[in-house]
Image (cartoon, rainbow, N blue to C red; front, side, top):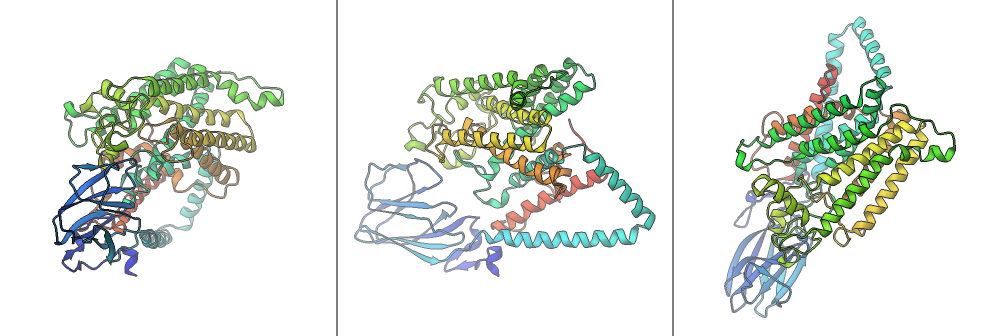
Length: 570
């Protein structure tokens, strides 16, 4: 059963296995070659990159020890001459091999034989890393069952029959009130914030959960756009309710501006959590982008909204009525897409190819090392300044790239598009009276946007015209994530609001206090009881357990606030 928690012997030969981190292994290097040689490696995670120098191998040397990463397949090349920091494909190597079977806490032998060929052998097998999910699931399930038993015992001891009757009446009244509100929207929002807390807590250190280094779509990349989109869905519902109460459009716009300013200000304060050094304060961030997208989409939809909507008489008119109502927003949406594409592929960036979309650094064999993000990176640096953008993008550690802000100014253009596409889904809710027509519209939109996004990225990670890229907030990224959001909302709406097979618990309660959960988990990032450390924390099991614990604590806080009927929104 030791494999369930990634246990390994603390020592192997002369190696201390406890010194390894997650997704690391030891590599014994031995050279029987008569001259100096040089080892270079390349991870599959680094697309179109050159090989990077690891170590010089003296002639006829004994075993040297090197730590290697096991999260992606790793290619090795040994050269007879020093190629510098990077080695390119135009120089032949003594030997080359690729291993996709490296495991965490494994020990491997790489030997350069006297004839210049390579021999690779497994000295100690590694440990499987995915069983940690089963282990944590069992522990969490046991913990929740225990809590439920304690809760039942407490209620049985504490409550008398009269109190139980009063509670049942209160619950019935609450459910009657909730039926007037689409619980699937709150559930979607709650699911998004819970996943956001989980991935921001590290997600157990799994590479497929963390943000993609550049192109691609991992679990963490889906959360933020889903949150933006569901904010857009709620905009038409909120504005229609305010207009029906007789509130003027100017008052609604002022409320939107005030709320956007609060979002931006809170985000700016959170950026100063490590110290308010104004010369290096990051200006943009998650809440700042929320504020900008909400401001533009909210004001635009308010100005385009009609206080008294006409009722279409014919079937074909009803079929496109939501599109007609959304025509003003749709025109702006298309203009924003055209502006984004025009700047991305037409703006000259000094020292970079026109329309460059790569991470710079050593990608494309280090041809454009200072061009990260192309026009997006250039505009952000020009407007915000090098010192005020994010200094530690994921691409920096994979591609040796420079600073880049994934929530910068340029990406806000398509973030507004993402929010407007959410607003259109909200208009569908208002215009289409039956659940069948709503689901048909959403599922058709998901299909069309999914195909458009797939066509733009070539249904691949790297080979399309516009790859799916969260850092750039690319057009294909918007289409694909909106398609996924439409599919998820359709499923939740059918299960929760139509069939009532599930109430949305506990995600509905989380969605009703999402801002408290987001700000709270950001501020309390390194504090008990939300976070804790035990030893080296060098296994996925411990990291996953800590991430899940932090997430459950915040879910518990949301449930407590709901029990006290405390809800906060900006």
